Length: 233
View (cartoon, rainbow, N blue to C red):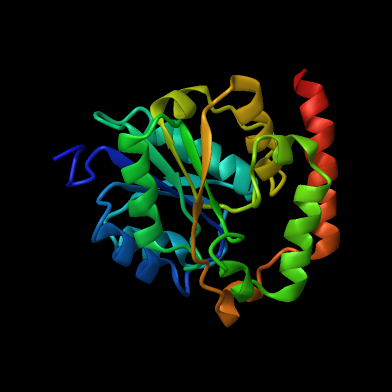
C-alpha cells in the first residue's frame, strides 16, 4: 500500500478568528482522519482558544488579529518543523471544507508528480452550490488575473490547498490578510511549483455565508495581489 495510511505525515493548518461557535466540532471531525492539526488563534476575542484546547489540537496564538495570510504562514512554519511532516493542508475553521476532499488531495500528492493541489468549486457541476454573488466575485478574480488563467486555475481563492514539504519550506506569505490567496498564485508561478486542481465541495451554511467576500472585496484582493506580484519581481 502506498503512503502513510495513518496520515501521521499530514498537518492541517487552521487559521482561526472568533470561531468559538463551531471550531470544536470542525476540529473533532477532522482529527478522526488527520491527527495532526495546528490551529492559529489570530487574536480572537471570543472563546476560540479554549474550544481548540479541548480538542487536543496544537494551538499557536497571535496576541492581536493579523489576518488570515499571517495565520497561515505562522501555522505552516510551526507544522514544517514537526518530525515526519511531509504534507500540509490549509483548512478553514468555519466548517466549509470537507475531510473527504482533503483525503483525495493527499492521495494525489502521494502518487502524482505535483507539489500543490488547489481546490476548485468550478468542476463537475459543483458551482451550482456557490451563492450567486460569490460565484460572480470568484469568476471576476480569475478573469482579472492572467497568471491564474495561465496556470490553469479556475478557483484560485479557494482556501482548501494541499502541498508537499517543498512548498511548505519555501512558503513566505507577506500579505497578512485575505490577499494572501493572490500571493499564493504568485508564489506558485515564481517557484514553478507543479500545480493541479481538485474538485471540492464547499458547505455553505448560514454561519459561513455571513463571513463571505463581496464582489468589491474580491476585486480589491486581486488589485492587491497584482501590486504585490510586481513587488516580488
